[in-house]
Every structure is written in structure tokens, then in C-alpha cells.
Image (cartoon, rainbow, N blue to C red):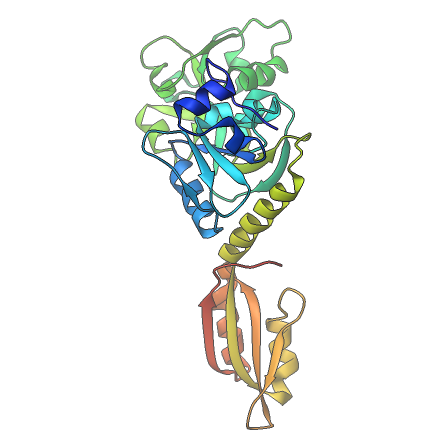
Length: 309
């Protein structure tokens, strides 16, 4: 099974947390961010997926009561490394963190939140318009491995100085310790406030579900993936119900074909039929307009809490 090491053996650490090694021995270990920009959404996702657990205050390990697994709360930047080393079976972290770790993991599922871009940035006043102009200069970043790999295509002689800092990367240029930075850009507000602009984009990132390719808990991982996938699908769709004359049914089904097919139900009036179908949430108002145009009545939409498709 996976084990956790943090300045001591698994057994010693578990004793310190009042959770014995025996309690973990047959459980799949899943890592989730203990804080930061992904934490709240991860916790909300697990709750909606019915993954219940008991966690004591200040403890970073919790036994799940609904599945044969335990949650390990770790810094998001460490999760990909633990998973790649087989010390954790599964985890949620950013795609950028996976790229920075360089470890071998299976990306099982994109989770649809925490979306942003990792980009090369420079001061607006510097008038730097391409990455090539930063070759041989000073770059500050929390992603040194990704930055070195990216700059290598412009700088085969490795003359660019890539320096690591753990946070507040955006102030490096204004403090005079960097000519450019590599950092995450979400809304761009922080970047613009620091007087920076994007020179080039390295990668797009979001929260992803990852697993160790050699884990023995494939059954639990399959269940967790299916549950989370159901929540993600539910966020994409709404259920629409409406009544339509049978003479216009074909038009209605063309507008709302559903994932595989729509559900039809008879009404007391044989000339009419009730239709129920999944539609994409972002197309909801457009589809309702189209249904009205063909004479559909009693059109109602419902939010979907879970959706296995």
C-alpha cells in the first residue's frame, strides 16, 4: 500500500495523529490540497460526491467513513510528487504542479475548476514582446523546472538564470531582482497591479485528478472517478421538460435530442406528448427560445445534482 513519509516513518506519523498504521494498511490514500486556491472547491466536490470523513482539528489525515480510503491533506505543490513516488495512490492538484514535478502519474480526470495560465511575464515599461528577448537574463519563478524546459528551446546554451522563489513572484521585477517572471495568471488583476504583462503563454492549467499508475486500489479509484465525473457532468447540464404537439415532436427532438435520446411520456390528450431531455447549461436560454418557437408549452428546467452519462 502507499505510505507517507514526513521526517519519520509512516507508523510514527500515524501514531502522532492518533491513527494507527493498521487502520491505513488496507485503505487507498487520496491527497487533497490543505489550503490555497484549490482547497474550498476540492472539499465541496468531495462533499457532493458523498466522500465523507472524520478529521480532527490540525490533523492532516482523515479516515473516510463512506469508502475504503483515507484523505491526506498536503500542500498542492507536493501532491504530484507523492503520487508519482507511490506514497499516495490518488490526488487532486493543478496541471501546472504535475508538469513541475516531472513525475509519472496518470491524469484521470480534468475537474473544471482552478483554471488559469502559466505565462512568461515582464514589466510593461520594459517593452519586451517575446521570450527570446529574455534569453540570458534573470527569471524568477515558483516553477523552475517548467521554466528551464520552456526557455531551453530559445536558449540551448542555458545562459538564462532561472531563480526559484516560493511566493510573491510578481514583485521580483519591481524590486530589481528579475528581468522577467514565470507565474500563474488567472484574472490578470495581480499581474497588472504589479505593472506586468504577458510575454508568452507556457501552458493552460486546471485542477486534475491524478493517480499512481502502479496502485493496487483500482476499484476504489474507479469509484471515486465515477462519482467526481458525475458531479462535473451535472455542472454542465440542466434537465428540460416540456409538452409539445405530436405533429411538432420531431422538431422538438431535433432541438433537444438528449445525450442518447430524450424521454417521452404520454399525456391525457393524445395529441400531445411530454418530453424530458438533458441540455447543455450554457445553451439553456437559446434552446428554450427554440422550443417556444415550435409551440411547446409548460417548459421547465431543473438543475442536475448528479449525472452519470
